[in-house]
Image: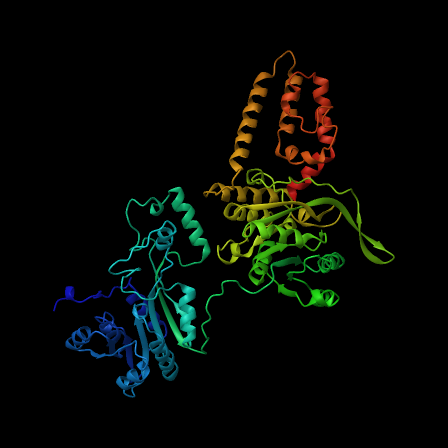
Length: 610
């Protein structure tokens, strides 16, 4: 018999699962006087010589195939034929062990071939526990990027060997393998996975979704890579030890829990404001939500505890407090989203207020647009903190304004965030299943960044209901004042570079907005071309250029809803640069002054920093 006649006769190499398995064994020094190494589903015994020469341990191979067993014996190694699918597997293995101490166990690329695994799984757990020995196993990863990309496009190609070996009867990703092993009382303590960017499933050669750099390849690869960390893992190679059995539970189709998680970030310095927020929540018309308070570096934790204790009983039992002593604003959000149990997560800072139908508005949207980002509206109002008879209070300093566009536009959000955090509810699946995390390298604008990435993946559903009051603290510290303008600018540039570096999915209707922007740019160029600076009237030409840049700016367009009447020099709230091409210099200067003095323009300067 030649090597070509024997299936799965692979040579030992350091780069293979065999080499990775031996490195894990070496890390835990499996040398026991008179001990044996038990190699289950050993096949041709690729590691036999390495085990005996490297560790001085007697190799014992076990396989169902008698031909493989005979071949090992001819090579001078102990080997036994045994049915690893038998429910009596444990007793059969104990018999061949014959009272000798087991120093270590391996089962390399065998588990996936067994239709009935309970017998061998029970035996592995019991033997590892009884002998206090390590188990190293390797299993192909069915969640490799190549398989995921091809399956997304309808391809599933079995092969004679490899990730989709036609003899595999059980397929594993990391979570399924962990769950199955835990059911047998086996728990991973180390790993040395085999990584392959291009697996044996990386075919055909002309498959565009597999060719590096194509738009579809970049998009699908980024989605897969973000979802969980094993996209390039070809084989899981794990070291396990015995521990408690954890009964396997089938995946739930619908996880029990509230519909919404309200995430509140606080530093414990705005006690009265946080109390107002909890009062707003207790009065919600829809109570299908939980509250997760993420307290960041709070010196007096009892303050938060007392506020929770003072809330009505119906709400108090749904509040959890998570204390965090590290990281920045984005860190708190990642921790809070990880702790959330709701189908959606909405973020409410401790210095803003929501109206009684806030949750109800999201719930109505969910019934028609499940799985999308849910969006409502807020008004902006100036506020200050005051003392009233020795008690803290909040005083409005301006009338409420509604500067945000009623309909979400991804294209417009690329330049200016039009959606305060509390007006959004994000599907938790984005965090849990897509791996979309808040960027902890950002010290500001982390909400804008997350919204852009979320909206590109799942779209946004709009409600035109005003459900919140976004406070503008003119004299007190807030997120807008903790960092200077340069920090805000650098974070904004980082987000734009990130967006520019990857393909984007756009919701239906966004191409219309792109066309409008392009047409606006063409109009701007046509207007400015008509009014070159000349020696006859250089001041007028320069002023007209200035006015056009103001009226065509994103800030002026974004605050159009605030200009209910009047507009600019009697030309309406939507006055454009083209309206002034024939105007006299004095009228142009008057229009510039009117724009720069307007309430909407001043508010837009603040919105850019929020």
